[in-house]
Length: 366
Image (cartoon, rainbow, N blue to C red; front, side, top):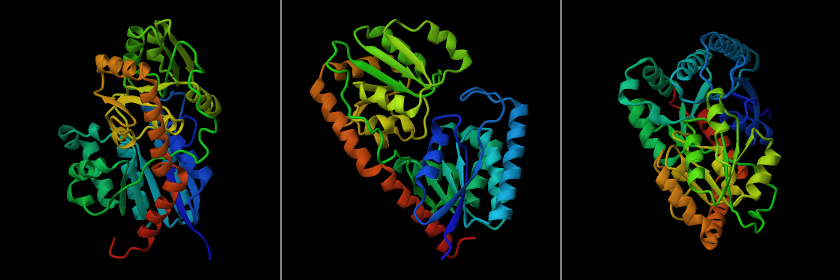
């Protein structure tokens, strides 16, 4: 029997991280019983990840996506279109166009909301992006969100159009990640605090530098791509900070294995892969309670969660873990177990296949 097919409308690396990394993992791992194709929505032009978009590049990007999607719908006739929506104010307009085209092609549509729903405050909902978000939700046969608490948040945003059609589908890490045994800082006198992600203000990197300045007894390792605007700030990083820049997965795994704590002070998130990777590596986490992070890291059992920009809170949390090796070991072991139980590819991808199957076989949906 011919396998059913799904069309992922999603970015592929580069850039590394975020939704692009998720798409690459899905393609590499495969969905049980399904054939996958991708319409690549990656950034076009020379804009770096996290930089503000330029109108010309975004127009080119939109045209390329539109043509690629139309071509794929006509030539492959997928059973399901899986649209990944990062929930940026401008990107949601493009995603709405993709949703309209998919439904015009009489395809079953699943939309995965992978950004921070808090961007859509009541005033934003009254604008074009808010109307586009509600239209996408009404067009979709299934709306996927990243965490349990996001279900009510999403349905409150879009209204009754999504009632009964919202499902949680988390991000995941490969079953073999990280492939390197966690050893911490190898008994060195100075503990290592690691961060993986974009080096930008909104990712809380500036806050991290302030924490490092106030914790001179610890070493901080920063992995990720800086924006042009943030390079000046990095040049003034305190002496106990090492900025490695973007690194391949093997180096990231090695750095997580040799670290003692992850600090992730991001102001806004969907469900960060970096936090899951640190959990899989057996690290205790200090992070903000934004996006899906509270569903990944259990407060007081796997990590310590603070408000965004709470420098004092981050300092106290990092130091509390730094002076208590037993607590670090307990949190790290709990995080690894939670990741193994809920967030490995072998756990998540069958659920994804079941969502596809349910959407294709359900009756009574238009």
